[in-house]
Length: 227
Length: 101
Image (cartoon, rainbow over all chains, first blue to last red; front, side, top):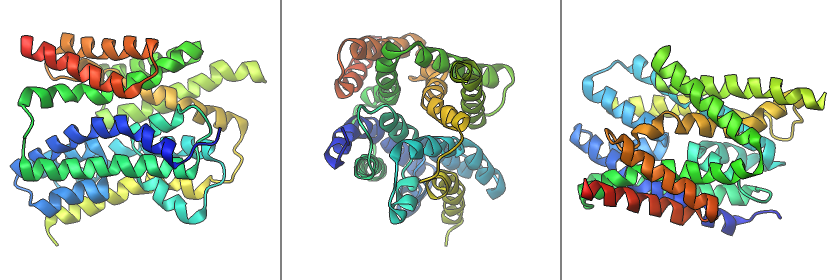
């Protein structure tokens, strides 16, 4: 079944729920750090990359240099290169004019939901999934800046589990289908922990290295059967 | 332009370029089999690395509550295929535990 825009809208709901409180926290943090409204919203509007926004604001607040901030961002977000490449494989033909747009909105959550969606993903599916997720992020940021924390603090902290719950819910149906899913996910999680806590390389770099290393090992393990 | 805005634009550029390169370069191309297999594995390995070890500190300083939250999501999505309830439910469970703490 080829998926349409309305499937993308439906798939966006859990991401929107997960994004809003995190974006709100970002708006609050940026305001507290002395950023003006259009700078804060600019982060979400033109950068649109969760973790790097938090790190970027923190680095600006402590007075880090421009080069240092930009390099950290590049390393942290480079994983999206592999995510985009993986999704493009599944999309089939994409209109030329849509390519630069669909690429802009790639995030961990959009990628994960779209990758494991039942059915054949299409441009309109991906675009609606992407744009709604984006709107939640941008409005959440504005709400955080303007209204501040209108939710009880304990509830807002609790909502931090949301995106992890989303990742788990995406992975679980795959675990039922094949052992490959659990083997690859656990190996990547183990590698990421090792790189972070034992080798002590920064978080963004450790995620992208884990993805590349374990996916390559996967090809070595599972590729043989097909030779 | 403010210094902050200048930084945001540079950050956005180095983020956008890796996101968009695959869309403009490999659309409509058939990649070698091993590369395709590698890319097919990326969703699994990415989810693994996004979850572990970050999930253990999903709620900062609350290992047990974080774990209960994701175990709820795990069990619920094992039984039912509804991501929305799974996400809202785990937030609810964590919220209850946080109040009772």
